[in-house]
Length: 551
Ligand code: DON
Image: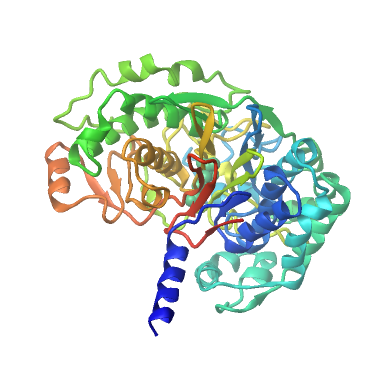
């Protein structure tokens, strides 16, 4: 009996506390996908091969965000010290126009930028994943895609979380027959979910590479779908989709080196800017969770998001002052009017309340191999299940990423984020993103690979996790699970997760002039962290149902 109890306790402990691994580790939003990454590494693949296998698997088992009909960013560190980043963000179609979501009175029609055909940006995920595989992977498409194809063709058992999620979106799926036929049924936990059309699309990609998606049968189905519902993505938009390999954005924080994603992601700039600000303060002795620290975080976030709104967009179209925004001096200058005893009110621009919508989805996965290569990928359809529109006959969901553009200066998008000219819609332009795939080093050695979903809150979730590890010496699990706060300039409210404030801290923050709004959990960090001896641990945020796996 005693032995039995000990075994049970050890099993529970092993499940809750991350184990160390020597050969590889994957943390993703779904256990099946993480396991596929490990299988690929066991078969000799590197972190890039594994990341591509995980990405395709998530498009099958995590359709709320995993995708082939969306886009993303990949930050890669290679053994030997080289780094790179891939931008496979969606693009505006070539006949998109600045005011395409405005009605006759000049008001934004949110429905058009969020649901159905006109909300879709030209997808980049397939091009991005295949580009990384061909240039930096070691395995064939068939080898890395076989698990995803098998899961689509022969099905997988649906978890209770996924069944509940599908069921809660039934009325959205019912707007489109193609979506309703696949996702609109009443699901129960344990149901076998088979996706034949998706399996065939994946096979076309396996057999023909990029052309299997952007040309031929799948492109025909795609363009037909667009024509059926007033969408504007054409054959040439698909054919001309280009992945852009970019230099990583580099930053430092208290002697640590960081790499992250630059424009069209705002994630890297905003993360480094936040870290540059708090570096001037003694965060550790201010104390975790205190009013003093949360006041500082709020004032830093307020200023950073004000600049995000003004300056950031696709740097291939507008000039983004990246060097200034990420410089230590600028961070210091911006905090000159910081008042330790009062909240600085944000200006009063009118906007909606749309950011309180829950269940917005994106997904991040972190992969590390035994050689020292690692990959941070954040990918999205934007909203949960994107535009809710499935390409009829091709079995995959399309993004509603067009909503990440600023439809009208000062008008909030679905995350309540406002933008300006820099992020206005233009043909072939990439919409601004908050995605923040990041890798951290100490003295040239890997420390951590991380990222998160969460819309506009991605940046602040990643930021607080990093401060928790570096300033508060928290374990990976504690750093990720710790409650978070968020402020984004407008609306002028400090959003707090349950447990982030005790009643004394709450009162103190109110006294300082902050307006506090309790919100549901946000961000789902998936991270891999390296121990001193080079072994690694992974952890998947307890806010989600993902899992880190290793060997
Ligand atoms: O790229 C972006 O910033 C958004 N499309 C991300 C959406 C997101 O994280 C939704 N998830 N929770």
